[in-house]
Image (tube, rainbow, N blue to C red; front, side, top):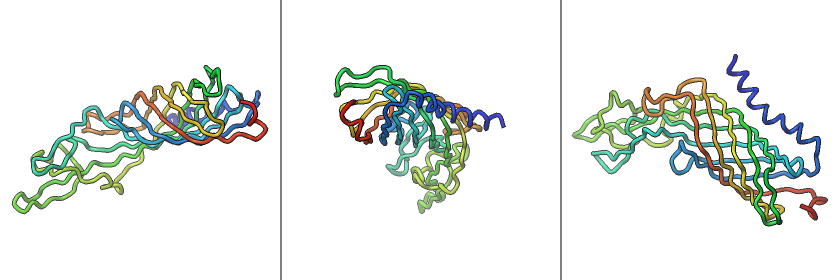
Length: 250
């Protein structure tokens, strides 16, 4: 019950800022943008993000977002099978794919001196996390003479490394996936190019904290964690909708 209360509170605190923003409502601008996520827990590419923003005045922005990312462990070690050129990750037991649904309150810290300038906003928010935990599968040789193999969930305590013939496929075992609910919060800065009325580009960067109700093993049971921290960068682009009466002024 306590976790449920925390989830509800964390989800609605950023959303409540919209009430404050409406008291000085000047413009009503909407944005839809999409882009890529990079974070310190995912290697090169973290995933994707989608943003739905509403400008309630010149200083305050309320944003709803969806992020779909991949979380890796720093203990992951990619090896080449001794039987072929196929790769597998030594000791890996699970994939973790968080789907984040949340709200952001953005406040303008720096406005551009010209129409083609850079705007800087502070970012504070959070929301719900739907974690998808999927077992990691390998091709394991059952007969060395005939090279017969079976695709099974990897267990480094049972499966001998020299009999592994690569990973079992990215989508293998989706029917065995488990939902892990959690919460997250983030704080950072949003650098937005204010060069166009109807087109928007930007970079949001900051720190993210995420907590689950259960420990999730990614590389063996010793690597199981319920709390994850990461530095993130969201690069996005999209379109902006502005009422006609506001098109002559910025």
